[in-house]
Length: 486
Ligand SMILES: Cc1cc2nc3c(=O)[nH]c(=O)nc-3n(C[C@H](O)[C@H](O)[C@H](O)COP(=O)(O)OP(=O)(O)OC[C@H]3O[C@@H](n4cnc5c(N)ncnc54)[C@H](O)[C@@H]3O)c2cc1C
Image 1 (tube, rainbow, N blue to C red):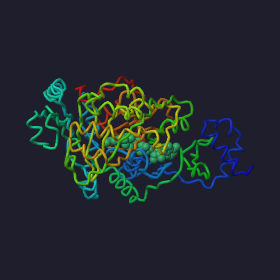
Image 2: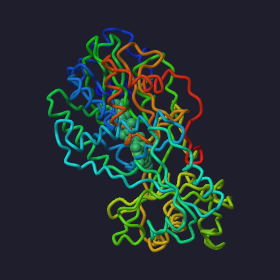
Image 3: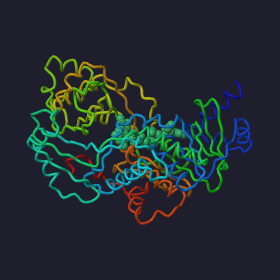
């Protein structure tokens, strides 16, 4: 057995938390380091994870706080969860004003970037649009609940909600079904370009000369705590990153935060995160026959009896491809979403996959996601449901659809985890748990994480965020569970 293979086997054991038994002997530790390709200088801050949160944190550390930053990422930057998002944002969070304020802050930071207030000009390429979110219904009871949601005076920073009766709805959006009875329009909501945002932050960080990226998987600190061991090419090669006593480490590993946490914080409690599979479907609409490119996010709020979507014969075929608990439903729940995205239309209907793939802290989420995991009926279901609200979608039902998705890293209260953990040794923090809002909140997450990691005074504006997003907080149920929660 070659020494390389031996090394590989040992690192595999390290990955499986056998670190202590494998490397208790100091001489073994030394030989491990000798066999590694190189040990790299770590800088003042190490950020683990090249998604939008890791990139944003690196940006604030290097550009705003002047720190030397090394970003270690297992996959190329912006190629994992941050590459599959629907790129939508909303400051509407029902009763959760803290989340409204947090996303609002992120948007203001994005507007500063796009408008050149940050010292450079992102050239408006973040494509920040204010298209709105439009909740629509035909069921009179649901329409009443939309009307009363609009009549609750909104407290800052929640955006104003506008109720539109059937006439107003069709005047503004003539492509909606004429049988809809009302809608609720939330402003300060819309779409943005996540890839442009991330690429711009990377570029700005690189220009400081204080930022570098290493492609590799962070494994463990060595037994002296002075080197962070990393592997490349699935363990074929290894390198170490030297840690000074004051180097701060920010864990931004997205759905893998718990894996990184258990490796770096031996003995600390697992982070309160569950990973849930979430997917979207896209279909090409070159002629905009469904909805115009300027349309808002449309969200259907009615329960849909199955017989309004499919005849009996059709349902037999559909049922064959659906999980049994869904196939036996007589009515499908509300919530189908759609947004225009250039020549594509993106659709999501969460109930189809909700709770089917949930992983706790001990389970490693897969990546890339095997397309076989998505029901082949998913795209068809989304299109036929959306056609009930936007009839133009009927014409797209024969088109080929594409389905992709990723893992939502969810906390019990629906708020992020940013800060020190119970067992943090002072210079280790986490930043993540951002489920389906990591793109829209990426700048406020990164700004807060960078300040906490460096011990920079957060100021009174950040007090509520520090407390409300601390990984050590008491967590109740989510404050925002959807429009009806208002
Ligand atoms: C279908 C779908 C639609 C969505 N729509 C929206 C939306 O409209 N708006 C919105 O705001 N959000 C949306 N989201 C959520 C958003 O995409 C995520 O919250 C966000 O991308 C999370 O970013 P992240 O940086 O935390 O994680 P990721 O982008 O997953 O990045 C994690 C990084 O960690 C790295 N990593 C993991 N383990 C290690 C290790 N051991 N060492 C080094 N690196 C490691 C990975 O390689 C990866 O680069 C959506 C998500 C999905 C799945």
